[in-house]
Amino acid sequence: MTEAAFFDLDKTIIAGSSSLAFGKPLYRAGFLQKGHLLRLGIGQFTYMLFGADEDALGRARDEMLDLVSGWHKAEIDSIVAQTLDDVISPLVFAEALFLIDEHVRSGREVYVVSASPEEFVTPIAKMVGIDNVIATKIRTDGLGRFVPELDRYVMGQGKADAMREVADQDGIDLEGSYAYTDSFTDIPMLEAVGNPVVVNPEKELREAAQENVWPILEFQRPVSLEPRVQAPPKRVWIPIAVGVTGVVVAIALSKKKRD
Image 1: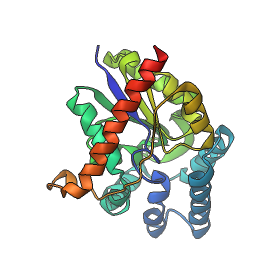
Image 2: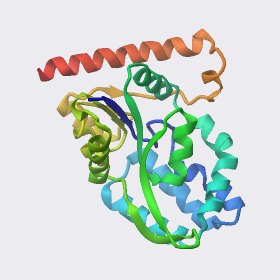
Image 3: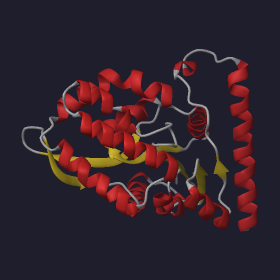
Image 4: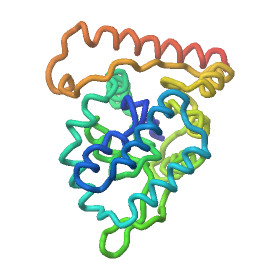
């Protein structure tokens, strides 16, 4: 069976919220009002400082569905495509890019697993070289407009369920696979694999990681994606290589302790 690496998106691959990142382009295009943009900003600030529990994420889900109802999917896809490089490229963690490449070179399938809408997640995933996406899917009507209903909500236990479903379909060995996330609500995602890794954790997840002897990583270097095409200066990549070496050691030590 094939092994895989499952990456959360917000605060794991990118330094922030994918939904908030596209807030300004959507506002300029007339899809959001100033009040909506302000609420997104306040929500993101709280999320970055304290994380989010399931109740908060549930409220955010309901507000999102109410907000996007009536939007035309094709128009949103177009706005995301036109603004992707400007709003997302500066937010991508260099450490995440390195790990993604390492997993690909090791022959593992790599997936992005996110509660954000797939209209946001899929283009970002492709930007960082990932084709496999497990994301929230909002239902559309016969005219291609969003309705306030979900075909799939990938949050909390929903992430683990979706991962197991994909593992069955794609022949993935979850016990030999990896998962990376920053959020306490993603504990089921971490418990679904044999190699859970915590990234930039909120307080509760850090405590859970320490209790379970899970490796803890700190991603701190958002970079432009240009170094993936041009040869990067050694001074940029040497710290990353050292950090990843630490990841390997931490994972090995955690396995040894569990054994």
